[in-house]
Image (tube, rainbow, N blue to C red; front, side, top):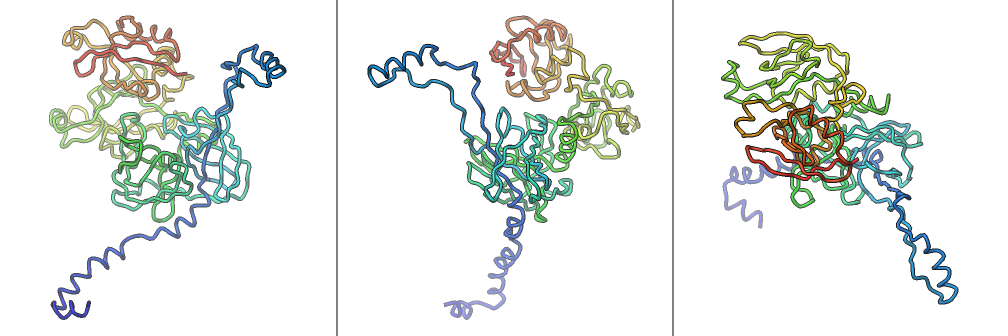
Length: 463
């Protein structure tokens, strides 16, 4: 049959017909060697949460009554109501980063766990010790008592480009060592719930259970940790996000050393520079991070940074988007001296800033800042102009959502809080006083103004 078609068409046309298929076949990668080499270092992570004995609902007289009924009737009216431990279930994935048993996963995989179980590729199981966690990057470092373990190689996430092939290995829905592949869709993605991590966006099929598993490049190096998915259904929809490996390395080193992460802090509230703002400031094109406010007594204020400055470079690294600045500063250490290039009054200006500890650290902030941290946000006073425009008195405006409670309750940068727990808010001082008295684990009403529209939302601090 093929010879018939060959005789019926010109030779050149026949070659043209076959060429695209042979080219596509040659360019598709083969992942089999990568999977064979990497799989032994991938682990399944399950957790057990023990019951709180203080919350037992057992009838104190149940044992005595049960014994009496068993004696006379051979039965018991009160079944055993003592709370039972929750059985371990497959919650996520992880991978081994050292031969002596250090394992990396997501913080949300092991959060709240009393017992963490790590199962290896050869079905050995270990109870893991929690070395440290970092909620801000959603990372957790575990340690198991084993030696000569297989490990992964950590790669350089800065070298990744959109369009490159990547591969994930994990336990979606509990199906161990599932392999999925795709490409890098975008770099430096900031999600509404997190403005610190510059996520790698991919179209790799990631589902519940993949969390904490590695994302590999074609060289078999881990260039990210699969962390989040965008979904309307609870399953994969073509958009997934991984924490870049370069950020992971910076966090892991600190977790190993002290069990916690100490971040540097610049002390500015920033926004993106669009085309209109670039034109109004006389900048050649939209770029950099525009400082909308300098926090009082911060490293930025001490070094001479001002509202209206546009940060263009940090230690020689170009800042194209404002979302790049928190990550660049956050991977540095308190006490570091950095060179900041800003655009001010039509010309470039060089400043030197000595970074300090991030104010998310309770040991390095005032009580007011501690209360703000309890809510996971930074607030400031509402200007008189805004009060007149909105016809309100007082209130505080959310200048930055750090995560935690504020993010869980759906608060956004720019929201104005006028009432909390049925008490009017005059300014940041009164707001701090109200926050101190808020109950834990119980919803209270919060009145906010968003996009000019007032509304009440339930607000709960979970501790």
